[in-house]
Length: 203
Image (cartoon, rainbow, N blue to C red; front, side, top):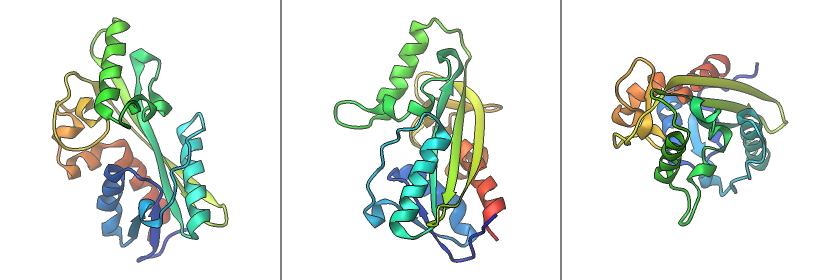
């Protein structure tokens, strides 16, 4: 598998500031220069695939070809057992509405769906993250991270982003949003996927 050398530039193909910061926290100490899509003026491609892998591949390849840099893209979401795995690959879509993307809207919609389904607690859920590293020549590698846990209500905590205020990882009593970044990164789906990427592709 192709590796990135120490000091290499890595484009993280996301416009999500929270995701970019998490990746910088984990990958920065490994000697990479981590750059975001916004710094290169890249458009946000439509996520038209039906799987996390498909969307991550689409974003990574588009960014690598546009910039000539190796590009790492993430597609991730929360799958709630009682909702048949929803919102899953449509997690970000559940946040869309008047005024743009709002994850309190998405969390509220999820809670209302659980109540409508008369689903008993605990509301089992998992966070899934798939990363694809793509090179300008079209070669690629994929890595997955999963974090099992449960959805709680009401939201708790002020850290993190997305669904973090309503997700409690297995073995914990706190939500991701109640943990400091280092604690969350040690447990999270994205942290696990990034460690798999680092083990395979970094010195």
